[in-house]
Each structure stands twice: as C-alpha cells, then as structure tokens.
Amino acid sequence: MTIPTLDQLTKHAEALPSLPEVVNYLIRALRDDNANLETLAHHINSDPAIVARLLAAANSVTSGLSKRVHSAGQAFLLLGANRISNIVLASALVYRFDMHASGFSAKVLWQHSLGVATCARVLAEQTGLDADLAFTSGLLHDIGQLLMFTASPSPFLQALERHQREDIPLFIAERSVFGYDHCEAGRILAVSWRLPTDIIDAIAAHHEPDGFGSEIGNLVHISECLSHALDLAELPNNRVPDLSELACANLGVSWPKFSAHFAEIEARFDDFRIALGI
Amino acid sequence: MAIKQRIMCLAPGRATPGMTLARPILDREGNVLLSAGTVLDLGTLERLIRRGVEAISALVPDTRDEETIATEISTVRNRIDRIFRGPSNRARDDLRNAVLHFRIETTQ
Image (cartoon, rainbow over all chains, first blue to last red):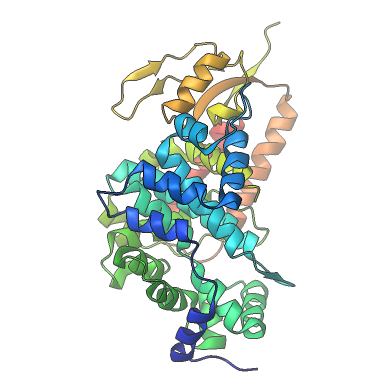
C-alpha cells in the first residue's frame, strides 16, 4: 500500500482530468469586470453536453410552470446569468468528476459540497461578502478528497472506514493514514488548477480556519458546519464538526438571527439538488 | 371545519398555482414585492423566477393529527442530539439551539 508524499501528490494532481473549460471561464469571471454574458453564452453553447444539462436543470427549476425551456437563451432570460452560472458550474464539476468505488461515492461528496455552497451563498448575501466567490469556494472545498482517492484509493478507503468506525472527523482519520488531510491535498490541487488565492485559502482553511485569517475561509468553515447542522446531505453518520468561535465572531454570525434563513437554505438546496439530479 | 394549514418554504418553480403566500416576498433592498395572503398564479410564479426570487413561504394543507406531530417532534429532537454528539463550545451550542428551535417551529 503506497502512500504518496505531498510532493508526489502534486504529480497526481497534474494527472487528474482538468477543469472543464466553462468552469475555468466562470472562475476567472469571478474577478473580471469585463466578463460578459455573450462570452458565457458562447462557452456554454460550444459544449452540447453542457447545454443539455443546463436545459434539464432549467426545466426542473421551472417544473411548476407550463412552458418548457428549449434553448440556453431562453434559460438565460428566465433564470438570469447568476443562476445559470451556478447551475453550469455545479453540473460541469459533478459530471467531470463522477468517481465511485465500493465505500466512496463522488455523488455523496458533491451533494455535501452543494449544501456547503448553498449555505455559503446565503451567508455571504447576509454578511456582505462576494456571494459568487462563496458559492464557488463551497462547491470546491472538498476536492482534496477526489485527489487523495484518485492517487491512493485503498488508503483513502481505509481513512473513510476509520472515520466511520471510530466516529472521528475524516480529516483526522486521513492524517493518521496519510500524514496529511484533504484540506492540504485540496490546496495542492487548487494550486495545480491555478485557482484564485481566495479559493485556495478557503479550501485549505475549511476545517481549521483560525490560523489563516481568510474571510472566505471562515465563511466556508461556518457553512461546512451549518450544512451538517441542517442535515442537508442526510448522511446516516452525520456529525456537526467543531465550529470555530473566532470564525463566527470575525464574520459577525449570530445564530438566533441567522436562523431566519434556514428554511430558505433548505428550499434552495433542494431545488438545486433536484435540478442537478444528485 | 376549516382545514389546518402549515407553512412550507419552497422554490417558486416548485410551487403550485393556487397556493397562498404565508409571508411577504421582499426584494434585495427589503421592498415588498408581494404581501402575505397573495394567491399565486402561473404568471406571478414566473415573474418571481425572473426576478431571481429563489425561495417563498406558502401555506399547504396539514392533515397530521396531534399524535403524529408529537412523534415528529420527538424524532427531530433525537436526530439533533445525534448529529450534535461529541464535545462542543459556545458557538456550536448556539448553532444547535438555533437549529432545534427552527426544527420544532417548522414541525408544529
């Protein structure tokens, strides 16, 4: 059983499927004031598989209405660029990285990541942070698990089994098997994919944010805990992780006040999950 | 006898024409787009989707009896005890209390 070192993990990161072109574009567009609808529509329309998934999702989101969505243009008019971007980003990631084996399912990972992304978006809207950056960071926060599983399936399954059997956090079980965890592995993959620094920090910080001083890191950490608290992925062995008091204080989160948005988070998550078919 | 109703939060695209709004719908600036009590029709639901409204609170019939509600509340409490097991701190306890309050309120 070979455990790759962190240096070797970088090589594995280069061997993983690359990010779909449209995902790369959407992530660059987060910080680009010149990004425009026409370019986004061009990226979407150049990939028939993405158009097909977008139409399926758009028709699911509007299932209560009488009219059907037949083109990407109609979907843009009805749902707006922000929701289209979120749908395209999530569906492209879910389908590109659809890995599974006995004991590991990327579908479960993406369901959880979608839950964290939804919490992160609503939390960002309420705290004045960048909601698109928050959503994207939430969606990508666990990509380190994909890298560790791909690079070394058997030890990763061993860590998962230990996490379940001993009821300890997965990142602790990973450290006992690998000597590092999916936060560190995710940081390596995010650097290899040349993701923006904010997203790299959020991935690295999402379980233990206090040493990072990253706003988005704090936000994704809190969203991780909230998605578990609201049972969004409904895992049988679900347990709410340790929640940093400092991260909550820095972001000014008051739970009695923010609980007014819990029902909205659940509705938005359900809508999105059904639309993506995960 | 009037049919009992409960509040359900759902995406406008998954609402059904004829449902009544339980709470007003506000835009991002806090202005009222639709007031509580509005009966939703297809045109209104489509306009809400176009405006980027992602969740609404509507009234739905509640056919549960008192015993069923009590069982559901007990299940909710047990589940929250289960998912919040293990060591905690003040922030996590506050989150637990907020989720418990929310679950009981939406189950009743």
